[in-house]
Image 1 (cartoon, rainbow, N blue to C red):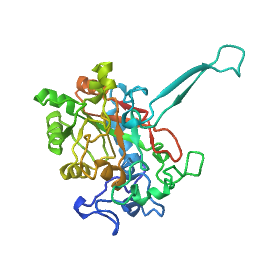
Image 2 (image 1 turned 120 degrees about the horizontal axis):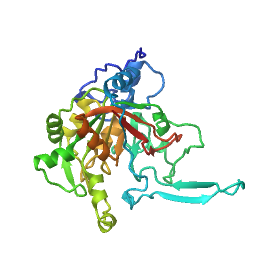
Image 3 (image 1 turned 45 degrees about the vertical axis):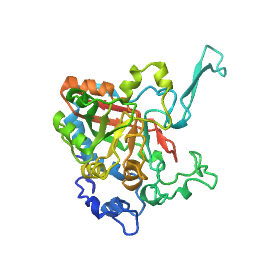
Length: 341
């Protein structure tokens, strides 16, 4: 029997009533999870709190039926070049000479943790008006006056490190295959160009594909960026512009309300930013999801195999497990994610 949790059946306040705590930015849920659990320390998990033992056990029983397993991780060297001027993946293979009895081969990798498939953690994106990360952590507590991080993996753990996600991203996943929906409905767009997907689009897609949402779902939205990349010429890939142009969720209050009202534990897509790029507004969906709500954002997840299996099995839901790198004080991480059917 799963342990009881104050997060099993949460009654969330309406978005219009936020902030939960007086004096916090409008839309912030800061302090809400501590209120439910009566915890004395500041929360670092946000909506991941919804992935309780009861939800994990329920999802495993309902979703694991045939034993099919699908990786959601794109090759770590992709895309190339990396977006936003970030350092891309580097790989070196060499003979390790400390053991002389035979040939022993090692390798080393170097990368920006957000150059490919990734989870954005809660030290990544601060609220644009106040410079605060999730639950009030201020950028001044993360970066010094020279914009250099004040804590690395070799220091004592600080608030909101990606290491807090260890063992926490497990539960029921749902796929909205917007890319397939658009093709079937004659909606034409190029995934490597700005194309905003609206809340109405998402709702219509969910209805068309028979997707049923539950509180605490891990939402995956396939919008076709990886399919475009894999079929693009080398010249087209090298021509990826900076700032990035890509399909994604529209930045509008209808979309903010749609995401809030569904209370996902985490959201992810196969696009560079989850939301449409470029964006000319002062604010981004990242402000709400990461900073105000504590909802992890996954980007550049490889959802091609997932789409195929869902179509083959007639499924839109599955069991998900994801184990980000255990980097103390880390900002982001490759997801190491699997979908299990």
